Image 1 (cartoon, helix red, strand yellow):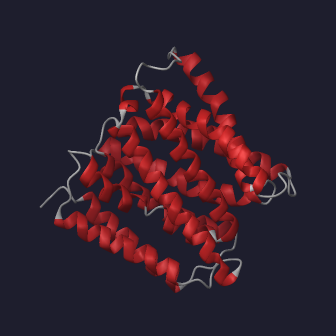
Image 2 (cartoon, rainbow, N blue to C red; image 1 turned 60 degrees about the horizontal axis):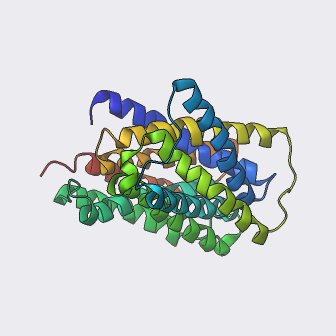
Length: 291
């Protein structure tokens, strides 16, 4: 990973870490699954506008439709689980568990992507990171609903595994032949109707909406699911998937920090300890190409 790639991925990780707080805030005003669907729908408009302004062609390349649908289904599963997780658990807990994604990606990529091979140092980093995730899940006393936060923890874990499936699809299926904008378009076009339909089973759509929720929605649609995701997919075309994904371990640091500063979530020994293990794993994973 060169200096430019490192700087871009650090910025992306910071935005994604703040996104957990934004989702938590928006969940106070809107039902989580419904809001996830609205976010995908809003992103469709932003991506279409971007493609029009930059002269990118909107179209389905031959032989990519099934891969695009698969990508959209995985995206829908990821955000359904993530938004529900943040309704049950704190931002800090969900961030640590959700950003275990590089663990699952690296394990799967070792078997599915020819250029992504495991080394001993990489394996050690994965063990450390997973120890941090396990510590976060084992301490079930910090969620807003006590021990029932295990539901949120498991949803966050499922979302992490689903997220790992996105770069695998992006690099291991026919969808890799299309530009990043169309990859993102497949995700939001497929996921928007699925999430909105699924939201019918999760209670009323409107909770107690206020101006802060509209600002949070705007931030997520424009800066997260449009700008950040487009850049992230572009990075996947330049650097190895496991290297790009490993930077997501920085996002829990931002998520925990802003959860503490903005939402007044507890900053306990277990949270700090889990973060230390996860960050130690990140260092080893980024040096994992060396024997």
